[in-house]
Image 1 (cartoon, rainbow, N blue to C red):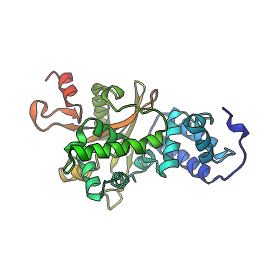
Image 2: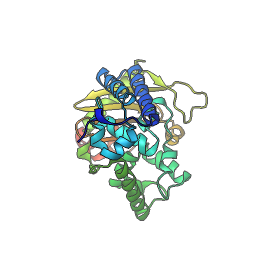
Image 3: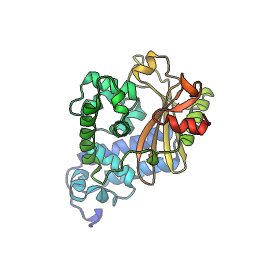
Image 4: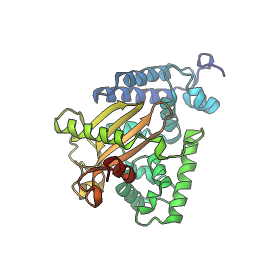
Length: 294
């Protein structure tokens, strides 16, 4: 495979846009207290893309994800981010850390999903990425959304897989519990987030949704544990606001630095059943009961 040093000079528009976003990510997570290694990785990759002599889009079309990984500072994780930007025009992780993510608009890009259904999906499942929605569909949780029966869930799942496979351009890891952090680890991150929030130790962002005054009220935590990178925030869904749970429901995003699995889970205080009053990971309730000995 030829290296990046021999490519010809062409358009730089994609390069500069992506470089600016990578540098913005570095600045955001640095301000939010992320691992300095991750900050440096995004900054180095941004500089490398800015200095690339071939248009990064053409480079990707010619050499794929593995070609992107030959660019200095670009590993599998950043390559996936670049592919997301090139194929969708978005980078959901960056939008989330800016506080500008609009998951309902994202879900409406799925064939057959309109505005109302997108809102219900977001509010019932508390997911804001296509990958997390794919995992929910794989687990059967998509059918819990009002108006989504087995046939419709199967159709949405098939469309999701098709869309995401175009972005991934590499064999898909089936979403499953074994590809996630343990519930013990998720509960540890949940506890750290709520403790540091209570002590005023976390930076805050101003979410775009349900925040007409633009207040910086939403604390954000970055943490690294056991090969996983975590980002935790209180849920900012319509349902959380309706039920007064915006300071109880914690959404935890996680990224596996080895296998590059990225997804999310929501941790809540259980209000009924044998786990009432205890913190529970939605979608993994049985494991939480086992951990608690209930």
